[in-house]
Image 1 (tube, helix red, strand yellow):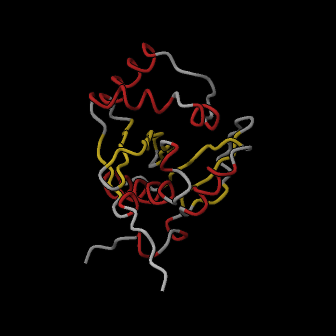
Image 2 (spheres, helix red, strand yellow):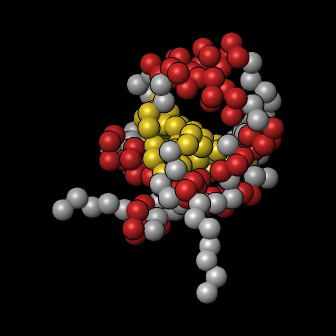
Length: 175
């Protein structure tokens, strides 16, 4: 019988709120070529712009940034921006060495459920570039479906989290 090597990066996913000390790490991730290429806002971000944005984001009541950890190692970030009326927008990126393993799908599901439980958000939208099929696939596997929010963003596709479409083992119902 063939044995498969144990990959400790796959064993445990956690999300923790971002802190000021994460600014440089998130900045480095955001400017990785693979992240820049997949981002809805292309282009490298300057440190001064990122630093100001990150500090304001941590102070904001309308935004929550989580650092994704896999096997105890920082792997990426997922962000939620509240848009009012029980609605939030999600954005995620992973360091390239953590992609292609389903970690993004798990982080999206965990983040959406965490935000829904903590804040009462009932609708989570993701705006994904039309040519970014890996991100579209991750969001769909996480329980998102195509949505028509009544707004058009050229080159972007809107997907909406549907809790009923998420795998049952991820939906926690308190006893």
